[in-house]
Length: 552
Image (cartoon, rainbow, N blue to C red; front, side, top):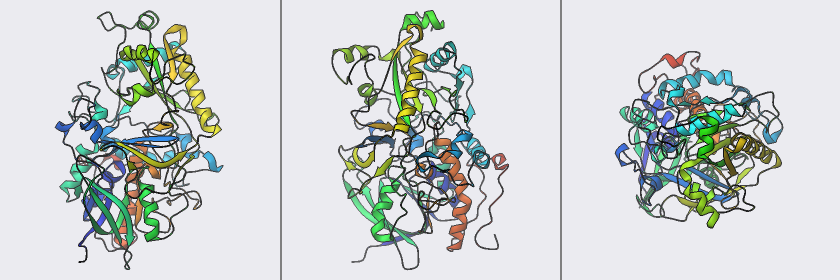
């Protein structure tokens, strides 16, 4: 019996920033759009304020341990936007001129801070991004700002996609925001896409693509069990004239690798040049008496700090090293971050210890003071040294537990350049926070799960050089017309800041090109939808691109 094949105009794989934005614009433009999402679809009231197995925390995360690098990402409708901390800075100007490991400009010549700024404007409008004021800053952010000032550094409140009128300062946003204060894509682009007819199908894990004789694509998927992600509840095929890959930088290259046997040779850069955004974490144990004495901090109850779990995610960053005149690999940002119990308490190390200390008496004493921990998140410049090995039989990883945990094929061996950035940022965090005994600092260990990132990038990156980039400057996959990649894997390299704003802006920038490609394949779709909320002021400075067919 032949398998029933559904048909759609555009098939979007993944519902994070790259998927939700494209789904909305194409549906609003008149295309029939289907979105396949590997993870579940949770309503706001289903986000739990705990970390137990089976809670929203384990259901909506994907933690994949590789060889030398582990990746933590979203696994749900809304993708990374559901679990991110909503920090939305624009990438510094120098980032677009980075050479990285290839010795020449990585980014396409058509993409710079100037050409991307109008698309940043659109995202700010769509997600209500705003620069926080000092009265918005959390206890942890205030301590970090005061410590920076005392050490002769500057600090700034972060731009965030958070509705301050709804935020309760619960600091559970990493497990999903039940108050809809955080501007996850589930409260803007995705409901707008559904309103225009897009179908979103959760628990659909794409395995590979094939091509029809007419040049369309067939997307083969498994239906994932809603509680045990190791199990399948069926499979299916959907045919589409355009495919948008937005499964994330740890899954998109794996799907394309597995598709190579059916589609033909993939560009060399598929599954190579992976970047962890140069990320590094340090834990500081704050001396409460010193915080009161040196920084003059008081919460009015005798405590100077004791801030963990109270407040928000990152609110303050130091950007002194985001200076384009500095040599590459010596530029980074330092951001105060709340990392919840679990992996954070395992990887946090005892200050002054000679060897990694995951357990033992000293670690037990360290954990007693967890409310006085301050975590500093460094985003440096790495060398894009990650490479994906052969894909697993199904999915993006070998599933180890029923939810969250998997073993992947990513191999990451940090170069001296990458270590230089990590070491310099570690030293600066230590200098700032250990001044006059304010705190004791120790970087997280890489010995247990390797390096780690919550912002995977560049595994199918865009560029001008076909030998070092998988995509052209329109986000189309080289040699495979009609396949576009719009997630973090398209970003060429580390950004030295949180990447959500740039991923989203690049996705917005790709839409006119995707619309033009769809029209050339017979899809009746137009470009020009406003922001999901109806706004149009963000269009300033962006000229509409001419489509590939006349009469539009």
